Each structure stands twice: as C-alpha cells, then as structure tokens.
View 1 (spheres, rainbow, N blue to C red):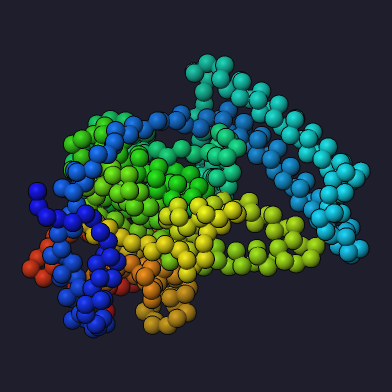
View 2: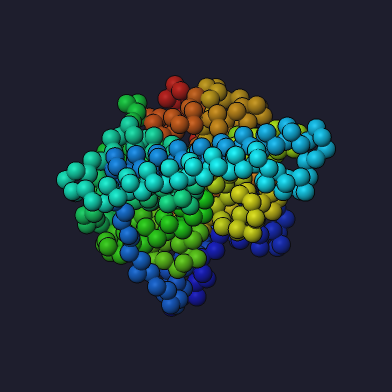
Length: 488
C-alpha cells in the first residue's frame, strides 16, 4: 500500500502552507499553489479500504404521490393552516387587549388561557383539528382500500405545485407525515424512476429550491440533459428529485445514501459526476461531506462537481427576510405576525449562509442557523474537480460592486463563485470559474451558453488539468449574450 494520506481538502492544504511561506496574491504564487496541489497524493482510495464500513445501503423506494395523496395532503394542510391562523389571530388579539393596559406579562397571559376569549379560541382549534383529522383519516382509509387500478398519478402541473409546497414548507410536511412530502428519488431521461441496470459514467442533475426533476426540461431554449447526452452519448444522465424544504444537510445525508444504493445495485458504474443548480449544488457538496463521513464507496467514483448559481456564501434574499422577521418580532402589536416567518422551511433558512453541515444548526433550540462568523468552513474534497458558475443580469462586463451584488437576481457573483476573505473561501482554480452575463438565476438551467460550457467541462473531464503544468492557470471564463466567450 502506498503512503497516501486520507482525503483532505484544498482548505486544509492551504492552511498548512500559510505557516511555511508568505502568501503572495500574484499569479506566480497562484500557479505554484495549483501546481503543487496536483502533485499531492490526496487520492484516499487505499486508505478507505482500511476502514470497516458498512456500505450495503439499499434504497427504500416510496410510491409516487397519487391524486388521493394530493387531496389527503391538502386536507391536512388546510386543517393545520386554520389552526395556525387561529393562533396568530389570538396572539394579535391578546396583544391589543393586554399591552395598552400594561398586562402583557406571564401572569396575565396564563389567565388569558382560562378566560372566555381564550377558551373560545381553544374551542375553534379543537373543532378544526377534529374535523380535519377525521376527514384526513377517511381519505387515508379510502386510499388504502381502493384497487391499484384506481390509483391515478399526479399530472405534471400538480406535481410542480407539490414541488413548490415542499420548498416553502417541506420540513413541516415531513414532521406532520403529510403525503405531499416528496421522497428523494432518481429519474431517468424519460421521466421514469431509475430501475434498470446502468454502467459506465453517470451524470446526476440536482435541481434547486421549489423545483423538481421535471424543471430541467420545461424550457424550449436549452436543455442541459439533452446537451450532455448529445456530446457524450455513452454517459447516462439521471435526475434527482428531493424535498427542498428539508435541511440541506439532511438532503445531503440522504443523497449520499441514494448514491451508495445506486452503486450497490450497479457495481459497473465507473464515474459519478454531480451537477447542481442553486440549492442543488449545496446538497451535492453536503453529500460529498457526509459520504466521506459515512465511509461510503461511491465517493471514490466522483470525478466532477459543477454548481450553477449555488449560494456557497449564502443568499442575500434570505438574510434580508430574516432581518425583517427579527425586527417585526420586536414591534408591539406586530410581534404575533412574526409567526408567519416561522412557517418558511428549514431549507430556505439554510440558504442564509449556505449551511451544508448539520453542526450549523443542530445545537440551536429554534429553527435557525448559527451566525455567519460561527459557521463551519465549507471545504471541498481535493480529489473532485470542482467548477463554479455564476451569472449576472448585467449584459456587459462592468467591474463594479453593484454588478456583483446584483448577480443573477438571487445570488451574488462572489457567493456563486465561493469567494470569501476568510476560511470560508472555496479554493477553486480561476480557470474552473465562469461568469455568464445577461443570465438570470433560473435561466442558468436553460441558457445555451451555460449548457455548452458544462458539456465542455464534462467532455474534457480534467484532461486539460493533467498536463505538465498541472491545473490550468488561465483566468476565469466570461461569457456574454453575443455568444462570444473571452478570457479576461
């Protein structure tokens, strides 16, 4: 066995390097860093063989959501919604009556529950819960006793609605065992569940928040899956579908298990590439982290990771939303409205700082994430070639702070490229970064320029990085609406 070290990260290597030599921001130093990184024996395949790891995970496939499931889930949501709205209305009523009298304290709040008004609100909640639960139970019983031939699959239009519901409140759906909660599954290019044998190179597309596996093919402008199959007909393209309202780290763990199950069922898979749009890129990175932690063998097969507009350093919109939510909670008479902010999913909350690790939220008692300065470094595994794509709505190249902050409308350029002044920066070669001008966040999935660039990276498969000079030292790619891609 060689004296190779276990898989580390690019950040680990850079951290040790800074103790032995002065950091130089010049291109010469950057070239030395990337050249030495390629010479490191960071392939940890032999080392992992020493671990006694149980990677015999098998995927438990849940049936797809049917029309009966849809109506059962909506009934449950309606019941919960009425109860939640009743709580908010009662809270506002309580503040309006008690706060002006200086009685908004624990003692008077306890008396409120025993008052006529408090008991009235309690009665409304009880009645709605009983009626809703009985109706939900009736639909569930019907769902179980009906003939399999009577099961009607959900049409695509309603499946997209279910994806949105999962993105907005997916963790609530799971905690309430709502049948609308989406399970993590892999689909083939025909939109069917992946069941047959596959081999060779596998490329998996991971969608973003409130989207689904169907989202990759809805545009007539560009289709990334088709572009990849056209340029690499020997590869197999699969589409991941998952509940985007759950914690990113939860989805990362689940994806790691799904990929292990896929490899167990198809041992002739030679390479796995992960492509993630927006949240999908963070889920893919989380899966790489937990796959290594779990000791799963699928990690050894990963060749490329490509993210499209993923908020590696967080999304500004969620930070703004959280700021407003906290301020509203402190306002008299409006504090009860802050409960509405708690309805947003944990997946959305994770986007605040791009949290992909369980440790960023596990120790908290509320549905939040640790402050930006206390989050865990978001490192990348060295053995995976990582490519980061950012976009901006501006169609021309302008070196200005406003252009960067505008980004693609949801994610800034710096966040999508993993750039940061501290330990949270992603150490990715400049040649592995691309900025697409005149492209919005959602159109990163459909832009022909983006599709062609991603297909080119996959086709190259790291060959241009394996020459005598190691990783290419070229500057990042800048692509403009005129279809002229230039290196600046």
